Image (tube, rainbow over all chains, first blue to last red; front, side, top):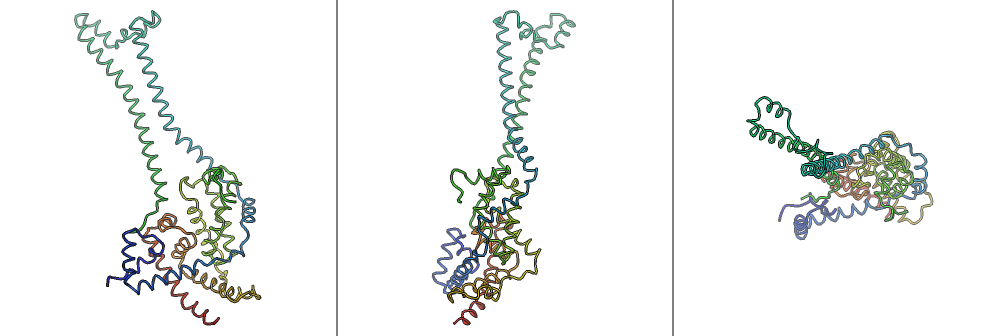
Length: 205
Length: 191
């Protein structure tokens, strides 16, 4: 006969075994009188333990609740502080997305204004912001220094710097916002995992 | 009053966390009998159990801001209740547990014989539970009287699942040893 399975009988009685282990225990019980007797004893014990407590001697729930609510002290202040922290926690993604949206709108609008100005749609009012006037300081100095023969090379370098400048700044800003948002998202996910893990019911194998 | 669908437990918890005593009263009403049952089995004395239940609900009120929404309020309360019961027992260790004689004296005109035997049996069972070590008693009480699963007990008491199983096995083995002889004697005495 197979080895006795007394160590699994409690978990079997409590319905805590997984399917495979349950059928293994049941197969064994079908042919082992000793383990079946042990299980019956456990069932009798469980029935005995579940006999009602002398609840008649306790004060009623209504009276208990009335007494308790009268005696409840003030809740400590940290519950308010926790609330503020909770609001702050949710403000992080909202703020990050808000700033990102603001930057997107600002970049798009400035680009549109520059293009419109270049196309002469805005008249003389916006000549100051025309992309044609976008020269770096070093470009102007070098033009004066080398004269106009080297304009084409210098102009190319100037455009390259403008391009990098226009590309890198928004990129860094957006990458920074994305990192903040991703860190928040990872923390939120970990928090959710932690919360749900405390409620998971698993069967011992 | 039952917690109805319109005002869910989560809403009541949120209100109670914001200091609403009536909302907390609703929650207490819902969990009172379960908590009392658990602390009574831990203390073995009605008066101590009532003190422990009151302490447990006051502590829960004070710590309500630390309760994580989405987790089981019942399990959280039972953990506080078990600790409150142990505190009360440690504070008043000289209080003897209920015994058969005091129960007999308190009820000299006991009704039918079977009811009397049942009361005696209840006392014997309770004394056997109290003779267990605290660590195995709390596991047994949470399983038998709190109705928690092994995993819930493990989370509630912050111990591994294997420890829950071994403590429960030990507790039941010990109770069987204690109760078989005592209840056999009781049955013999009463024919």
